[in-house]
Each structure stands twice: as C-alpha cells, then as structure tokens.
Image 1: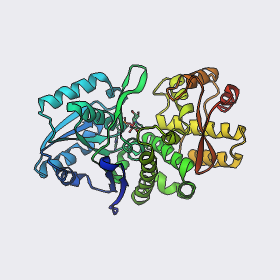
Image 2: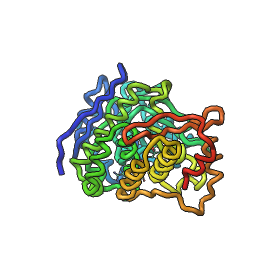
Image 3: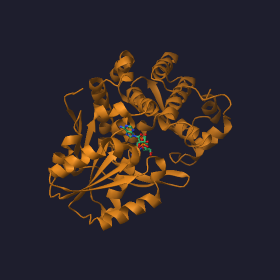
Image 4: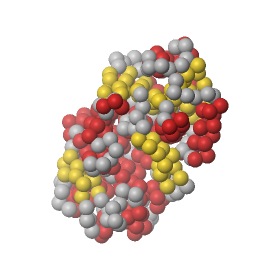
Amino acid sequence: MTVESTTVHVGLAERSYDIQIGSDNLSSIGSLVAGLDDVSHAILITDSNVRELYGETTKKSLANADLQVDIITVPAGEASKSTAVTEELWKQLLSLGADRKTVIVALGGGVVGDLAGFVAASYGRGIRFVQIPTTLLATVDSSVGGKVGINLPGAKNMVGAFWQPQAVQIDVNVLQSLPARDYHAGLAEVVKYGVIQDEDFFNRLENNVGLILDRDPEFMRDVIARCCELKAHVVENDERETTGLRAILNYGHTFCHAIEACTGYGTYMHGEAVSIGMLCASRLAESLGRITENDTARQRELLLQLNLPIDLPQDIEREPLVDAMKRDKKTEHGKIRFILPTRIGHVELVDGVDDALALAAFN
Ligand code: NAD
C-alpha cells in the first residue's frame, strides 16, 4: 500500500534535520543522499537480516544517484554493538577510503543505527550519516535524538556520543516483514509517548488497536510521525540530557533496566520489559497518591491488547530487583529517581521514594 509522505522537523540549530515518513521510499534514498552538500561516496551499513530484505534496493538507489557505493554487513543482533565490531568497521572505512565526502547510510534496527552512528561520530573525528530505521523501535525511538553508541561487557550503551544524522527516512512498509515479537515490543515505546506527553494520542491508540495490530501503513505513518514529533520536542529542549527534561523518556525504564539485569538480558525484549516497567511505575505513582487506579488500568488494558506482557512472574525474586535499580546509571548518589505519571499525558521526576514502596510496585 502506498501512503503519502509526511515530514517531522528536528530543530537543533545547525544540527537540524528532517525525518521523512512514507512508503516505498527506499528507492529514493539515492537522491536524498546525493542531495547533501559535496557527497561522492555512500557506505551502507546494515545487518545480515536487513541486507537480505532491503539491501539491494537501497544499494541500487544509491548507485543510480551516481554515488560510489560500498556495503558492509554486520551480524544481526545486539552482540554487534561491540568494540570488536566497531574496530572492524573503522578499519573497513579506512580501506574503502572514507573521507569528508563519504556519508554512512545506516539501514536497520536500533543496533545498526547505534553502531553505524557511533562509527560515523568517531571515524575521522566525525563524518555524516543518514538513518533508515527498519524496526518499529528504531523508527519511534532510537533514530530520533542523536544518541549513538556501543556496549561494553556488562555495561549497555556505555561508550557513545551525541551525533545527529543528516536525515532520517522511514518506509512504513518495511514494518510488514518485522517478526511479531519485535513489532509488539516497539509498541511499548509508542504507548509510553502517550502516557508521558499526549493524552489525545493515547486515546487514539486505545480506539485503534485493530489498525495497530494490522500494521496499517497509513495509521502507522501517523503513529510514527507523532512519536517522532514528541521525542523531537524533548530533544530540542534538552539535546544532551542536561536540563532533566529528556529524563521523561525514561518512564518505566528504571524498573525495566532492573528486570533486564535480573532476568538476564535476552529473556525479555527491551520493549517487553518497558511494558512491565511502566505498569510498575504507574502502580508506584498510585501508592504515592499521584495517579488514579483507573489511569493505571487503562495503560494495562492497552498494553495487554497490544500483546505485551504486563506482569512479572511471581517466581522472579523481588529484592534483587531493587538492588539493581540502585545500581542503574541514572541513579544519583544511590537514590533511585523515578519518572511517575500524574495522569495519562503527564509525568514528573520523583526522588526519595521508599525502597519498600518500590519493591511493592513490582507486584
Ligand atoms: P535490532 O536492531 O536488533 O533489530 C531487531 C531484529 O529485527 C534484528 O534481528 C534485525 O535484523 C531485524 N530486523 C530489522 N528490521 C527488520 C525488518 N524490517 N524486517 C525484518 N526483520 C528486521 O533491535 P531494535 O529493537 O531495533 O533496537 C534495539 C537497540 O536499539 C538496542 O541496542 C538499544 O540499546 C537501542 N536503542 C537506542 C536508542 C537511542 O536513543 N539511540 C533508543 C532505544 C533503543
């Protein structure tokens, strides 16, 4: 299905760029890249799954725009966000003659975006890059905001940079090939935007569960565009996470990171842990008298309908989860900070919460 394209502008002074959201637009990526100033060379970085599906179309489009094109494929999966793969990419860029006229094109999910973006940020003290996010999570979250990076053993996203792309281009039709679990996991971040910033958007999600589950291209174009607008607004006002505003994007994430750490990374997908984490945060807000039971129930119902997990199994020990929250890198002087909702559409930063209440919120 073909849908009309829409554009979200990310206003960051000289680092501003546009996010284009449409359909069947992989074949026009060549003209977008060639339209940037003084470009002669594109290096497409993708992963093994995405290359099979969309590598050739993208490569052909770049070549048709008279660019020298090289393609580098990394193994699919989080393990590629490593120092070893990064070093390999730096060396390949060097041997391919990458320079100021080269643009990196990151084609893939959040892993490829974070990795290729970090390579772009660091190689030659920074070269330009363009993102083509292909997972729902990458379209609504990781491709907006300029955070790029890789993992160290035991420390996720520990080495990275703020490096904004020149442009982001999204083809909603690529969502059709996404495995169901990845698609649903991405929906948790979509719901998050409604809870933290936009009640009308949350209402629209509640009223259109069928279209969402069907991956309706037109509806999903609008959903992605709204999420990008909401995240862009936050990033425009707190690009480098200095004013505290950007922290609202971490709604549910303090609980989520603890769940991921204590269940072993890989048991839950990130979005699944975010889903459980948001409900923990909302229950905590309830116990502090900050939100109504009904507003938690609405989140729970929507997440459930979107095929996301909503409870942490009883056999998972609770005490280690609170310890893990205290070790989270967002903790300040051992005090856990939470982003808690006061209603659908608004959250606040809350300090000094009793451990016992945080513990109780897991149930
Ligand atoms: P991913 O990139 O590993 O993609 C998930 C899987 O889907 C992979 O196997 C991939 O090959 C496959 N895939 C991608 N697009 C596809 C398509 N259209 N059809 C079929 N298969 C496809 O994972 P992800 O969930 O996209 O991203 C997770 C990463 O994003 C994490 O490393 C996380 O740290 C990062 N992240 C970064 C930010 C940020 O602000 N930079 C924000 C959130 C998450």
